[in-house]
Length: 54
Image 1: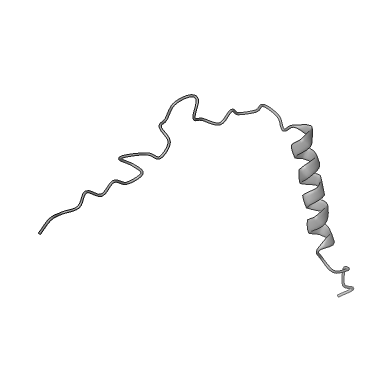
Image 2 (image 1 turned 120 degrees about the vertical axis):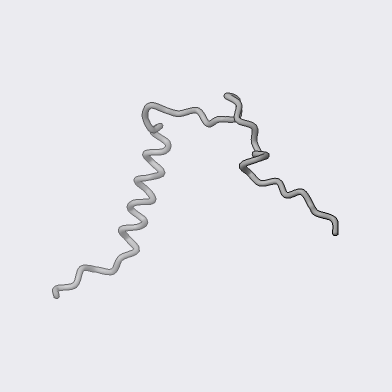
């Protein structure tokens, strides 16, 4: 019976671990990201019904 060779992400990653393939970390969020977060937060809050008096 022939055996097949299995390659997993741990033995052969999809993206090589190089400095060019890594995401650039930012020390602070951009204004665009903050604006998008605020709009999303407002949309989330608007999805709730009015507060009940329970």
